[in-house]
Image (cartoon, rainbow, N blue to C red; front, side, top):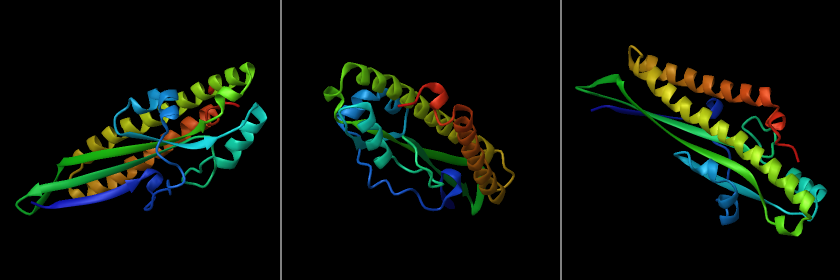
Length: 195
């Protein structure tokens, strides 16, 4: 049995983002963003945000917000990682047996001082955060659907070399779909993710 494995990250990078600055989600963040982790293969990470008013919280977000793979910084980001395995029998690779797995990591702001803010600012935060979670959840959905598309396309390839090329092209297509979603929504601002 031949087993070939190729690891890809979003937008065809060969090295992934350094997520060490963003710890696993706190219980507070997990409780605030359950929709993100209800989807299979998702890990939630956070960066702590503090402030007693909207201006201080915004400054804290600006100081800590993560970068996407291009280096642009956003209030939240979603990364995905597709892995595929090409296998076969009798020394021959069979693309119809391709198996694609994936993981998704979402990084969100984790407001530690919500209870120290006045009611108006808390309401603004809650509206913003709900829209931000929805926006990132839609990125997760794009990545999850993309994994299925990668697998289907690779399985339809005539040989394993073509399957790998198709996998790379499909990963690029998923990255383009995610970027187009950000363009259409202005990175969630048009959906209410403004604070």
